[in-house]
Image 1 (cartoon, helix red, strand yellow):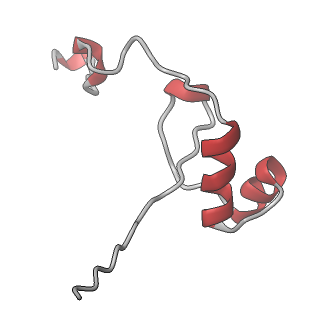
Image 2: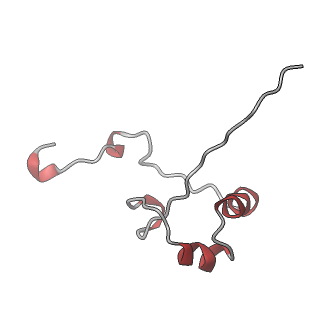
Length: 73
């Protein structure tokens, strides 16, 4: 009998500018305030069970690349 081990890795990101801002890691205090826990696995479970899809019209578009218009990029 063959045993298989599954390792799952995930990260939680936060934006101070809504769902279209720059993403960073939330503090444990932010997780506690928003989800009632700072444990990553419990936060992910709450997001999967109660979260809403917040898509963006910019994802996958020509605007999804970070550009600096003033420099012609």
